[in-house]
Length: 303
Image (cartoon, rainbow, N blue to C red; front, top):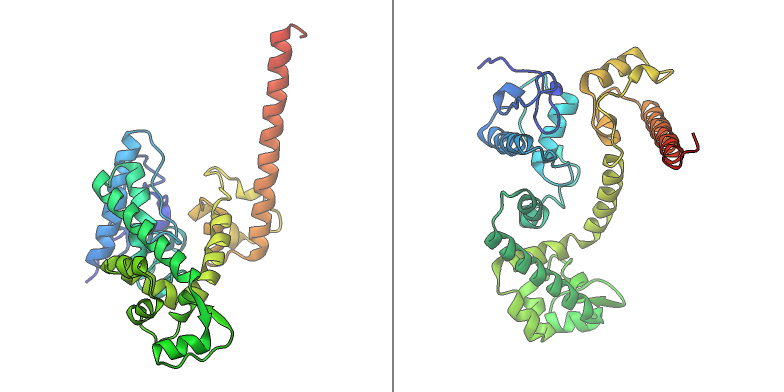
């Protein structure tokens, strides 16, 4: 089925069009296909339309926050030459974007902008408190691998002392069996909650990989924190190829991280962008400092 669409690179990450302020696009008009993709864009466009009317900052989800963030970032920085579907393989941080962590990642953000109620927020905080307590208890219980093997009656191919949380990484060990041999009534009571149990089980299985991904997310957020003004003059970037400059002009990425994900934008161009951003910031601070000195002299009557 053929249908017309607008190049999504003309959109801001809030799904507001650059050409017409306060006009938001969502769904197939942005080049996507599928009910879930349309629904995800619809809720984001709707939220941001209301925030725009209220003169509040736009609600943006990054690639590290949600699959919605991955989809919108793909659309606004890379565009699409064929109908876009959201596949999990498109996300770099799949371990942290698990379904069992959705409330941990998004409920607080939703509550801050008024789309999540008090009851839901309290339930989420209670769950996170239970999960944190379970992790703390599992880390505190340490035994030798030989002792774990004897208690569980299952092979634990490792040496030295290991915490109960580390033992959950072995695919032969079930969390419920582990909790029983730990002889900790508090821990046993906490995992009776299904959501808590699922979170702890996944946390234990992916613990070593999660640590690495958490560091990767921190690096990603560092790049995303480097904002690029919407009126950045890319003609000031000397030595940049015409193709690279045209792509930056067309997309106008909001951050250094977004710029680095545009096909054809080289690492050398990113270095120049960072340099230009720092130079612009320094000049702005210098201008502000100069204006402050003038104001001070005017107030004291020295000029």
